[in-house]
Length: 330
Ligand code: ACO
Image (cartoon, rainbow, N blue to C red):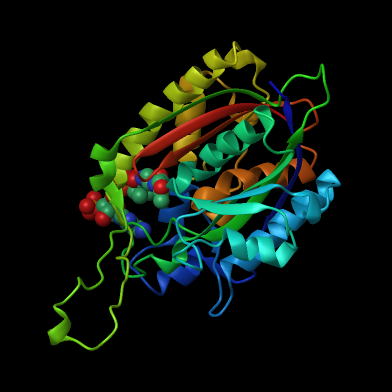
């Protein structure tokens, strides 16, 4: 089996910022409530006319630059997203924007677990010898689906993109993907969803208008999702560690989906990982769904918080319901 390694990371977020104070003008809330319940202070949101694909392409190019790999040499682009610019998929737009002419590009949807699932899927193409260079991007603009009158959800989400490059590992070097565990439970979909609510097909004689589709705003039962996260995430990280034949004491950094600081703290406590080993950038970005893990990872790498050789426990969780963990060596 061919080894693979993480060779670079990159990220990109919109410039426009919505602070907690800004949200006080939209809904009955306040900075204290949001910060103490979630840890979030600000979130970045796409401006009108700004595209998610452009930010995904910028994040991807930055990851390629760090890896020293040319876009022309990329074989595969996996774009994990639940909010593409194009319903048919945005990965091909990213491919065109960076000029990765020979790459196969496709979207993958697994909500906030999407990046970890994409990383594991992308790694398989390298391990089986099919491809050499794979870009895995997490990109979301859930601001497109937020009900800005619902204080239970609109305070949580922000937009952003993060990316990593996977490439072949030299012989005799260990594979960067040390272990993984992934799961889903469709029975929990009722707690977190954004359902199709467009028009159904009408008999042809009744309409000459074109059909118009739409997705509803995000619905979330916050308490149920909270309980699910603090129960499922420690279990899936432990399973991934077991798959890697490793112990929690060998983990240098927990890089979890940035949903809520209280969830990060609770997962760390349940795993027995000290809180100063948990990467958090929630205060600045909020919950950026599939982007949150690679965005947090990239910031920590560029700040030299995460160093070469560090062992990272990544874990995503969210709609589906889905949850997934990968143990990787940076
Ligand atoms: N400002 C002020 N008050 C609020 C707000 C707000 N923004 N939102 C809710 N409240 C009120 C409620 O109405 C309630 O008032 P009441 O007691 O008078 O009825 C009170 O605050 C407590 O509400 P709870 O829902 O119990 O608040 P909780 O402590 O559970 O925090 C939160 C809510 C932040 C949403 C939390 O449940 C949470 O983070 N859940 C997890 C969400 C998540 O992680 N999602 C990730 C997956 S996302 C994806 O996959 C797309």
